Length: 303
Image (cartoon, rainbow, N blue to C red):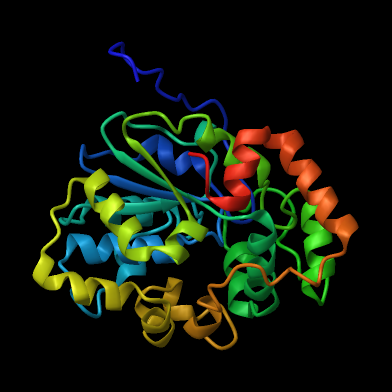
């Protein structure tokens, strides 16, 4: 970064669907120390929320992380309910979003953590998420007032390979577009209040990545609590104690929170996707993102 004022992102559009209502951002009142956790989804969002909660609260056990860290642009509950609840929070706020940069209001003083994951792993995780969604899920996103556009559909396939093929062919269908989300956040990676994280790096060195996040957020780590922080951010702990970290305690999925926090592994698509499938995905990534970003998305390296 040079010494001149950065070119801060500006909101240029709204995204409204069965899940989204980006207009919530228009009425959101920022605080200077706000933390915004952003992903396309199924990329480590809940994990990062857990990490931030543990850093903010010194490794405290049993924090209601999902309640403390709402998804701002999810259109339920409605704006008139959600925004006052967030405004009433007295702790340092840490919200999540699944929107591309150009559909949110961007604050130069807030801190933004963006987490990415290889799209093939994302699609595998989406399949588990979607195939286990229960009627409460569909009722919330389809039947609550204010839905824009067509209803959210049942899974387009009954196996992850065919699900991936539809997801790739229709760019994130039936959720939301994938490539624009990655691209818009990658484009602002050098801003001083943006920190880019990759799921693969979190898996490879969680302690190191947590320390980087703490430094970025300017949160001093209480070293006496460090073992508790690591324990509470581990996959096994989160799966066993997932109700507090999962939206509505996992009530939208058959199997509850343990279904929402499924495997946390990468590479399940290996030996399942054909060489043609892999080539199509990699060509699309290169076309949509360019070589540098596509390599980072696939490997977590090069940033």
